[in-house]
Image (tube, rainbow, N blue to C red; front, side):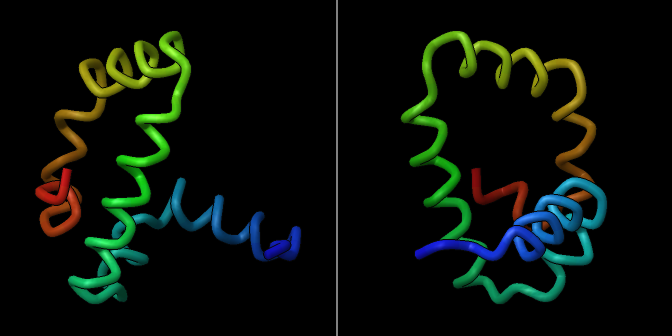
Length: 75
């Protein structure tokens, strides 16, 4: 299924800058589906991308977990 470039832009913006507002609108089931999808994406990452992700989590991700109370526990 092709995604409209405008929708992709808006989704990237919201996920990057307004994630908390987005997660507040999602049901628990929606959040579980996103968590499952995110795990799948991470499993498919090449080793260097995975190491960069872990590095980013260590440097800034831990303090972000408190901003995502429902979604943060899904991982």
